[in-house]
Image 1: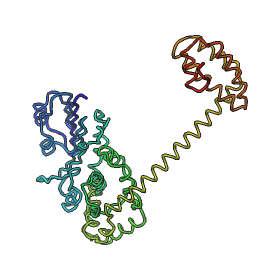
Image 2 (image 1 turned 135 degrees about the vertical axis):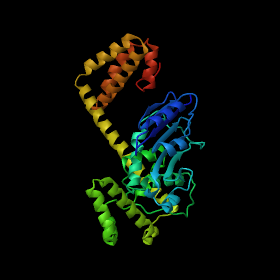
Image 3 (image 1 turned 180 degrees about the horizontal axis):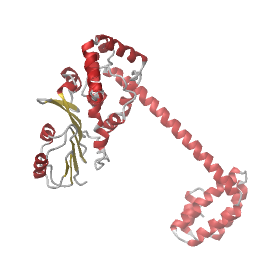
Image 4 (image 1 turned 45 degrees about the vertical axis):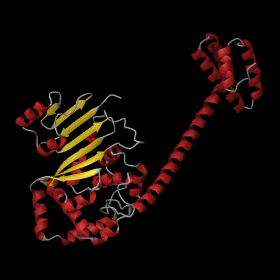
Length: 383
């Protein structure tokens, strides 16, 4: 397998200046550079820049893929977007790490692909990952921490977390992940049963219970805070108002509601839920296979019934294929005879089929390759 590496960086909060683009061009003459992006692929050689430095100075999101099984997604967030206690709780494994910069958090989700049974993904040359993953940054800015949970859950599946440890935070909506969150789980190869199990019994985002908790928080807001958010809305900064509201609400849930901590599940509990999810999945897959087989049988019976309406033509076609004298024609003739045998049996006329089959064998008795196929298909015995 030849070496392949893919680097993509995205600037979201502000475009690159001309001097910054010149600086990046000096590092890579082959990269596709725009005011908001840097993209390069390597089939030989290596990236001459430093991904961490690129993120510190220029960009807000980064995707890296390599065909030996390594992949990562990185985002840069303002420090005020997530409190340090939450960052510390989630970002404590090799699959999700955080670096505190002067004004930002640098979050990195990683897939190492270094286990013996690891099979490198076939998506390494797929370049749409940034488009699929970049919305996670906006979700985090709006207080949605489920992407952090997915990174933590990957560490659970690799055994980096003890069975008696608990979830970092009791989040809602784990059973209704967004498309970017699903893409992140796919990138990290999170165990699908563990992921589905985490969603079993988890409150939806808009449940009555969640609405009641939200109302409790809103009732605690003083007039100064309310005016601040309304002022942002009236100033045309609705997105900023939503971000701040959701961040503060998430911080209140994690810091000011000790009962939320009590609802966190242990790793052992998640393992049980994963087994339940596996059973559900296998049952559903079996049902799908059963339905597909029933549909196949239905179509098969319809085909055989149609064949019954013109047996003479079908026999003529089988003889014509046999007369061609080459392998692919023999294969087709054999399949036609299998269909004829089943069509006769479906009509309760198996003895008539045997009579016609004997005539067919007599006509083509010198075609050894054809006879071998018929014997293998159980249509006759070698003589």
